[in-house]
Image 1 (cartoon, helix red, strand yellow):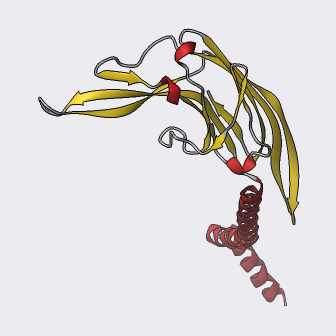
Image 2 (spheres, rainbow, N blue to C red):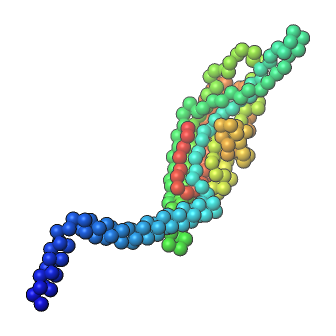
Image 3 (cartoon, helix red, strand yellow):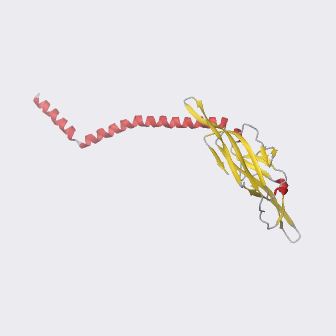
Length: 226
């Protein structure tokens, strides 16, 4: 019996003193711990993916993030060029002007919409935009034939028009003007509204005030590019 106990003691001492066996044991424990860690990571990734899907679904029905551009005053200018000694051709270029002054003021009211386990933050906003333009210069005079002040228009960029809740009225130099959906400046402003302006010929060198209100809703973000 004593010999058996001594053998067990020797084996126990060998196990305690074996660095290799300790490393193997530690490695096995680490591998076992990786199983619940990978399960937790998989659940987190699944929840993140579902949250992104819910956010996209709600945004598609409510409105996406909103970016307001402008306003930009655009005046067509006609240029004439010689094609040959006896033939000429004309082309229309757009002359863009930015406001002399621009003020944006308003209130953003966030809301939480629940979809199952997930919450999506959206917002409603009341935005007042005002400022003034001044035509105090001219476009490049080289080959300039005519400036079409009677065809001037104003463009305001709104990235997701679905978020516009009420009809926009533009107050221009004391007159209320109708607003058309869509942008004529697709290279600069892909989505927005357009306002046809009265003849500006008599307004050169004068300050032309404007203001309008936006009843706008969106999600995730609201930004302005003056």
